[in-house]
Length: 247
Ligand SMILES: Cc1cc2nc3c(=O)[nH]c(=O)nc-3n(C[C@H](O)[C@H](O)[C@H](O)COP(=O)(O)O)c2cc1C
Image 1 (cartoon, rainbow, N blue to C red):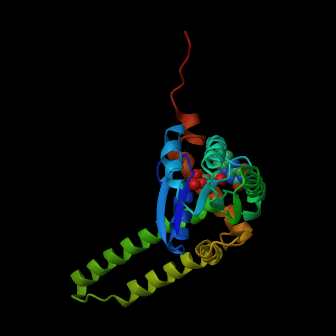
Image 2: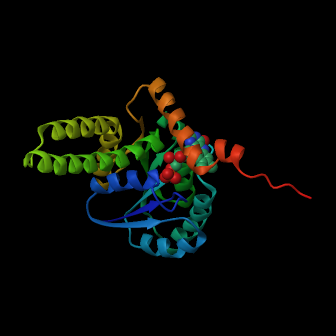
Image 3: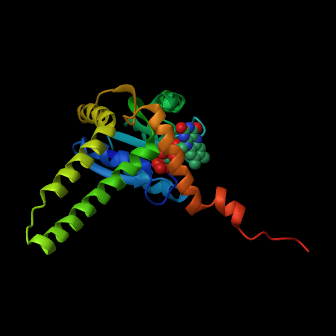
């Protein structure tokens, strides 16, 4: 059994789709191939991998309540390719969006379902994940947590000669448990979809989100985007950048 995982985020690094597909891979057995779909130059390589695949899992960011246009272009080519070669892999989708409700991925899921009907492929279903950006940040925070544990262990060795710092481990455990809790809904549904993929059966559509109350999400999202704007432009770069005046 071969499964092809297609990361459809146009971002080069740190995309949420890569994180969710990484988790989905953990729950899927058999031969696994990971592909990245960013430009038309990727089409031929990915289609070649689909040739002998039984399942294809698309990891897709939600763009304006739908499928990003570069993915639509690929789906059109994939439809023709599958028809020409008599291929019928089962299609699954792990979609994620920036806003908190995973249910917002429903139109995207329906588009994939219609694509399968039109292309004569079996629709396996998918998981729609809300708060994708924030969940992606939790994996970065986990590595920060690990780094802090290492620093505290080094300090403990330097100060007391003791390798095991109880306080550092308790703090690490608490933070890791919190991050795990935020991801529980995602892990639950991806594990269940993984077992459906392994069995070659349909999973249906399920929606989940980062497990925090909406008002907390909004507060943190505001702070997050405020900080991002400091680094990547928008608010402050827009205000403070040197203005070019035409003579
Ligand atoms: C052009 C564009 C359109 C987007 N439209 C939506 C949207 O309609 N609803 C939403 O919740 N998030 C929307 N987002 C946010 C993305 O879905 C979100 O950032 C997602 O985590 C990106 O996944 P990636 O990191 O795998 O690319 C949009 C982002 C971009 C860049």
